[in-house]
Image 1 (cartoon, rainbow, N blue to C red):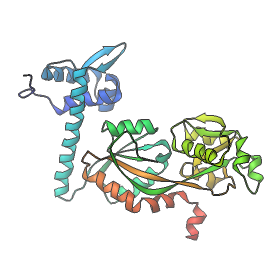
Image 2 (tube, helix red, strand yellow):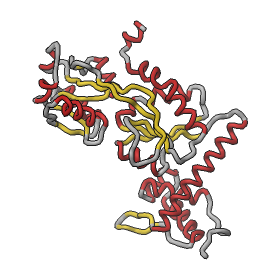
Image 3 (cartoon, helix red, strand yellow):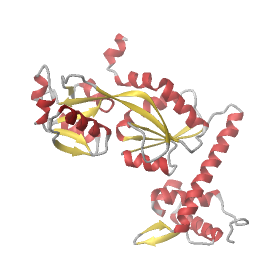
Image 4 (cartoon, one colour):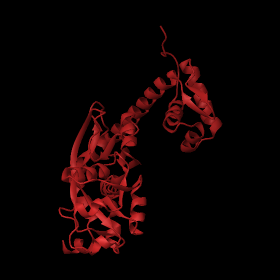
Length: 317
């Protein structure tokens, strides 16, 4: 029976393989680890000697994990995570809360996270942050592979067993350049927008699903003028007068404050959905991750609201 008992592998070797598995490249892993490429390749060779099997194979100009490499990389990530947790818990015994908060957010939610992190880390100076932004599929993959421990998104993924809690409202609005003809009206309806050049996100994005449902429920045809994978690109096109954008209010709050964009007088605006914080149901989370999740649930909404409202509205409050 094959066994690794008695074989020796170091954390440095495991970390090298984990980084290659994450980034898909020895050179990129070396850059991330602040090592030379030969140094990373040496760690991999030593690990292969300990395992007794190749963990990487060349494919064209790149590398990919072998079947054995997939197995070892999965356990390497878990071992590194558990070792990090052990360090956090030992530090907590002395009242020194630290560790790394590994969180991910869909692209629209990236506007929420900075003020939340500022508030959370203000009284926890030893907490480090690993923050990844991606589309919904990216974030689900990162959560499934344990690259992140917590995700902020519009709805929990059906593909995974998760623990999800709503913690804040997610307002969405139709916006356009101040000089757009529809901005001159007192009231804009879906009938008016049916023939407009709509600037929307790609399929699968939360704002795209919401605006499609809005038109479908009302019995109007939903026509995409331009489909873009970036909120920034949508805002730039809207500011230039190239169409009507449907965006998260969190994504365009600055442009609305400065007058670069205006909110269309659409009945029932803003359209509200929810933000949820998601963790894996079958995975124990670290102390710092649990604290951040509780922070979002208890204090997330007022922090987000405070960062979204216009300066003159803050003064009135």
